[in-house]
Image (cartoon, rainbow, N blue to C red; front, side, top):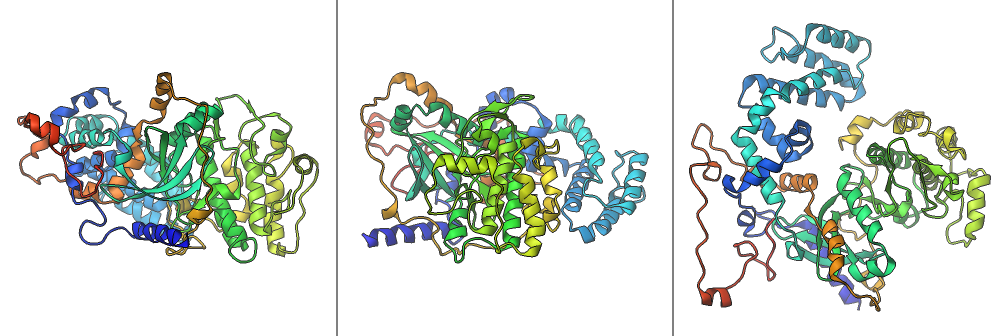
Length: 579
């Protein structure tokens, strides 16, 4: 039996490493599987796609790159794009170097004598930026300038881009993005764990070998527990949120027996494992503060979409290969309507805020309370209101949450007491109206606390800060396959045709931003997105040429011929679905 676990872990490690050579782990037929359609097949997309500058040219990664390639063909637009890139670099420059970086930016792009000068910006705005830079080089110094440039690009240049071959190529990428996704799109590996409705497995894409975690929701189990609204809610929230600090939904598909959510793979384990099973319980202050800062950013991104998380605890915070965290398991998250409050006694005992325990109405306050609990636990090595492995009745824990102040042991250094205790106390205030993060400023209140004075949040949000702990790439931070309990067979439940309406709402295929990021990260975009410099238009973008029809198959070919899902063969036993 131990051999089974060794084999499963060996396969997992081999899959993580990917393949070598020129293909870098890609399928032999990956270019055929990602072959562009002829532009004439994208006309329906052209008519139905919303022509929004922010969505097409800023939010969507491939759209952003193609718009910038278009701008590079016109000098006046290329200068605008380079100016925007320079401002982005200025914003993430370390504090001690920001003034020098700002001076170089002004000299290059805002000086009328410079060849790179951007004339679209008025002189008074330039003068104001120059003066403010000398007084205080803040990160938001050029915010008004970038808004004006985007306003300029979103009118005539954007209209010209829509009529260009670069936008046609974007339509081809969108066509690929919207191709059907099935179980044959992925390779399945070992079980990673289990959730409320099914197993979680390691998987990878056939064509590019990018690794993901596949969360299976068994259809019969969902129906028996009446979990349809909970499953759909989690899927829709994951699809909506695009954050470096929250797990991303990349694909959603269905099989005969299950709905499958394909999520960001986090190889580094969860914070609960690292707090309690990696030496002495708890972290040093610097590591705890770093994780708290990243969690704060994740909560800010959720709250920006008016989503309250409601289940912040160590086991729901996962580490990636580089030691950065993401918030996971959004099953209890819910949307808070504008100018409204919600009510719900949900969460995990010991992390639920007093207002949740009392079943009072709230908006985002429970998340800031839970952050205080988690910060305390990361330093102390135990939760503030219950002791690990000691059974305490739920009613007693809830009484402690409502009435008792947390205690700080000798594990908190004097510096930690003066910083962490103040922050934790402010986050663990019983009255939500007085709690840090709930006084009108949201996450900015928490970020401004002196505890985070060493954190450059712009650089953190750009992924430019190194994590204090890097997981071992040869370690398996999950249970042995034999230790993961098997689900019992669901009895007494039958699937009906009417259930397909719910299934279709969940299994919607690829999610735009993660899919496009995947194409860029795996270098598929670079290799496929080829234009002829000062030459003919690529055949697939040439309106004069129509796509050649597929040759008709004879009867014997249809009966006995090898059937490919997309007209392309694969180097695997199962046929992959074309992406």
